Image (cartoon, rainbow, N blue to C red; front, side, top):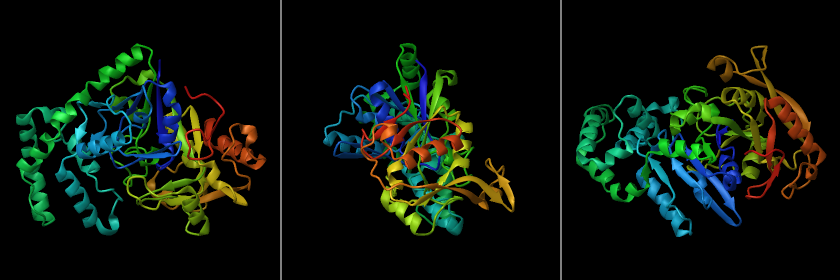
Length: 427
């Protein structure tokens, strides 16, 4: 069977967890291939609400094997906090597999992340301060610590010593912070080794064998297209590859195994942290979207910046990821609006841009060109077919689909597991 990739097609928080969960009964493996505990998925099952940060959302579906791929950076303490929380609620986590090649987040990188962000002042990136960026930087600098290193104390000690040679100089001489000792880092990481060992595997081989055995492998991205380190609003991005191309490198499967890419878009747009956001609203409409949509971070609790749907971003995401299907989430949030603007292009110094501007400066100064669509007042939370939707809601979906570069296959009409209108099968 081919692999299927789920990616966020905006700035994150689009509802990827719900889409993954919606597919859960049809897939055998769910793989997180990038990021760390700097982003979260919220999944609602009946009356139960689950907030996941590091674990793949497939952990909630019986029979599915959840996998943390080699492209993820793992805060081991957070991993076990999540595992303990789920097990306390009766969720079986024994099927989880963690790549031996995934990098771990040592405490000194969390210290550096928070300290550096404060030092940047007005030039801050908007990092969550969880050590994600510094750990990816260590990986690229070949100074990283991998999961497998926790089972070889000698190698682990050597790697920590090498990393702290420079990092302690920065902490003490640049930021006036105390030095971190090798012993405290090594002791902390080794304390998890015995408990972690049963979960660790050669996940690339595991997934290759699964695909060979005709299993369905679902790869879910953390963060989103516009936060991708290469293709997002750099430098206001995450530190990993959050687009479909990152699914192959972050999981160890061949790119030729991927045949379907599902892009998740909200019926409006949000982002957190710093960086340009052309359709951002600073008025009552933005407050309405934030309150009606519950737009507060799963991981940080931060209020999200809210704006209207941006079809330029959606077209860009469709192109960069090769999106075959869109899942349009939170359509119900728009209920009650008299008219709903949709950004169809940008105006940059009097020049119309129907596609993403090539440079960041133009994108930063882009003014949205809006098309106004009629709203609706009817409650759509019980809709289960397209015909159940009000005529104006149907028209909104069809116009957004026309503008966005790929078909809309699922429409989210509420937070619940079953609150979805399925137009086309995703698997």
